[in-house]
Length: 258
Image (cartoon, rainbow, N blue to C red; front, side):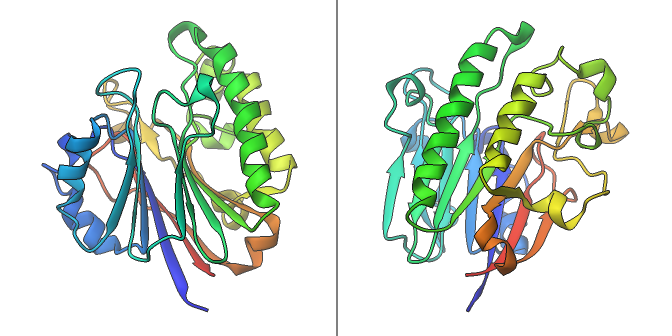
């Protein structure tokens, strides 16, 4: 079986990051499949940016509700059997948050989970999203193994956030409802691959630009690769590539024999 290298990256604007070292960084990591969140551009603009990586076939899902907001993409060297966009749920299908690529032996789902927002104004929406996304990936899992990757906008445990006490139940991404939503997904048989391989390692994937969080390493681990338990023996490595810059998130990786 080939060893496939998957990379996931919230790029915080595809038009902005391609002006930095993004293309060089992608080619250095050399993933077989690259998944992106927060492309923050219309489909034509995303297409133009991703054509700078012609070695990949690109699929993208831009927000229909708000221009320059949200958005996801999958770039792959191997052509998938099928690509689907969103979850066929009107309430959640307006912001370009989900792409599913079906390959011969597995599904790959990339997701940009909604943020609960300032003042937790969108927490109810987020809780409904978590329930529906859980249902969706478990429906896929009935057919073949599933890899989920993306910015899930939740720090699961205190080890995953630099200042847990200050943020608990106050900041989007570290409320008990969001933590419980993520835990329910794990309880259905998905595994947080980085934490599985690195149970005690403190490493973050997101830092606030405004507070110079990256320089001080005051961060959050909110970008994940999850696999269903049956696929776990095939996973060889889970990586956080925090040497790469260009966004307020760093890329994360997974190596799987599949």
